[in-house]
Every structure is written in C-alpha cells, then in structure tokens.
View 1 (cartoon, rainbow, N blue to C red):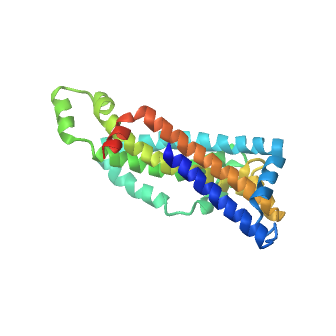
View 2 (cartoon, rainbow, N blue to C red):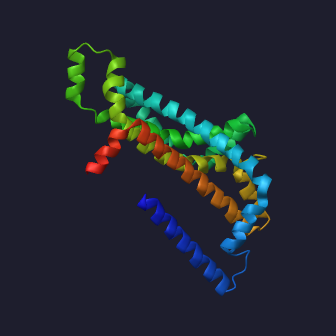
View 3 (cartoon, rainbow, N blue to C red):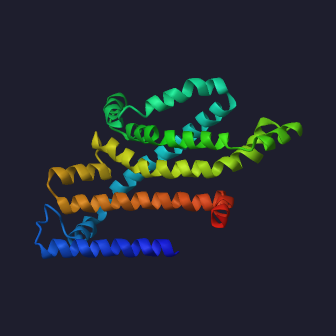
Length: 251
C-alpha cells in the first residue's frame, strides 16, 4: 500500500512544480500548458472523449487476447518440438527487427481502415515478449520432476497441467506486463495511419491544430489507460499465481 501512495505523492509534487514553473515564468500555453489548463481541457472534452477511449480499448483488448493465444501456442510448440523451435526462433527475432511503422501502412492497404489493421499491429508488438517469456519459463522447469511424472506414466497434458504451466505462470505474467505496456502504443500507431475514431486520431488532430493542452490531456488518458491495464495484469497474477508473490515476500 505504501508504494502506490508514495508514487501518487511524487506525481502530485511534480505537477505542483510544473504548475509553479509555467505560471511563474509565464510560459505560453501552446509551448507548455499549465496542468490546470490540461485538466480543464480534459474535463471539457466530455462526451467526445469516451467513444475514442472505447475504440482504442477494443483494439488493445482484442489485440492482446490474440497475442496471448498466438504467443502461448508458438511457445508450447517450440517446447514440444525442438525442430520447430530451431526454425521458428530466428524468425521471431527477425520479426522484431522490422520497424512496425514500416509494416503498419501495408496493413492498411491490405485490410483497409477498420479494426483489423490496428488489432494486427497490437498482435505484432505484443506476441513476441509473451512467447519468449513462456519459452524461458519452460526451460526452467525442474527436469527431475518431469522425469518423476513420466515414470508415473503421466500424459503430455498432465505434464503441462501439473508441472509446466504452474512453473511458467510467473514468466508468462512478466512477459504480459511488458506486452501490455506496448499494446496501447501499438493501437495508437495503427490509428495514426488511418482511422476515424480513437485516441490516436485525437492526438493527430490536436497536433495539427496546435492544441497543446488537448495533446497533453489525451496523452494523460493514454498513460492512465496503460497504468490501469498494467494494474489489471498484476491483480490477475496475484489471483492465478499467488505462490510467486509469497516467494518474493520471503526474499
């Protein structure tokens, strides 16, 4: 409980310093707006803001869900079939060397301006840390325990359910925390390249109109959304892998 309170107090202090500097030095609002101006802009957007938040959130959640399925499937296949891992692992690394801003325009050409290209961008950004973290978790499973299960004639499904999946869950959530922080950025990039709704569209319009206060307000919403998604993953981890929290407390 102390850490969130400390973080909130630290952020509040930074905002107060920001307000004092912008007011004391009479900095123009179009260069660096006051926090009070940003708050006024945020509350003034009202009903216009929520449909755009919902649009971006749909893209993020759909992309993250499919990225989890794809990343888990690839990791399990690489764990079960060493030859598959030999061929796929280099391709996974290559997929992360290509800038997403170079791929995203092609997705718009191929799939249009709807939800699909934004979801695909989120998948491309998020599936790699998930797959890599799950694969790393599989490599740390106690081999002695696996051999014991095999001597008891356990099936592959029983091995994964009883031994491998519980051992991998902390690694999975570590990768998911990384992925979820990138997911909103991926949706925003997709919206920049072509969309009619979303926080990325609001950012683009505010930038082109030199509405700096609105730009900061939308950016604050994006930060808040990312923070809430990260917190949701942490809560899910405490529910599904409580033994990892107890382990960290003992350390």
